[in-house]
Length: 430
Image (tube, rainbow, N blue to C red):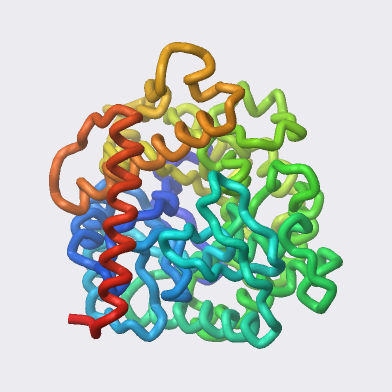
């Protein structure tokens, strides 16, 4: 019987001490020059001693001009190697792995970060007018970004991180190249699925060549975009078959985009996608999709999203649906949740988001038919957990913000960080 406490050896030869991973969550803890800080070290030290065999960082950007949040860490000629080393050292104190997630947001970078987003095509993200129309990338830019992904991976290895994950999910740049909705190109980077997947495959090849055969390289991929005309599950299966030839050490399965945020357990604007009935009876959002991917994937798999019980986690592992289970939100408030699961002191993980609502009326709830209300719930819940990570970085205790207050506090912090980032861009790093 396979259980969450079992060690697991990856194809590259590295061994995870157990089957639980802290999945990537945006931290928003960088300084105004987009370097790691002591707040990263403080938070990741807690997670490292919390028992998870693998920690995956939030988005580390390859482009300092275009960010998922104004306080992302970026590796783009802005220094900060000593800070990265401090982060890596703190995040591996417990004997676990620490992998850097490498990403570019593409069109999903808010206006308060940049008015000049880029993407495969000039298809604007329609979400509360908060995102500018992206500029279509030219071929030379794509080639440059391939080199940047590889450069960041080498920097991660040199700094002491024990692996990297290439982010090709959730509508960010690599994911948007895969989707026919956002990729309307007619050159070698668009059109057929083979062309739309070229960017991702070239990034993985360059990254593997740069870090060597003995360093873990993972990829995060959407099982489905969950929107009409987007990257489909059948296309995912084909891409996974191509990934089989790219020496990937771990394939993390997720799904959705900002417009259809299934990654957060929330339905978005597109009502044409019907959730599989069996998924409703399970904890994990993407297990049904992982089952079919498992039939074609030759690399190990990780599933993240929705797991809330020791029984559900062990069942997914023992039934062979995945090799590693990713936990996210529960670790924002209980960084030692894996240890508590292992010892039996905790059998069910916390789910504070279930009690978050704008009001008792149906139209104010998270199941509201009003799109703006749904978005406020999504932002508020995301903000609530981001604020908990910030408090971990500050060394303070969890705070029970209400949804309205969490939304306001989170957005205020975002704008303050954006202003500090803008002001820092006018002067050299301290």
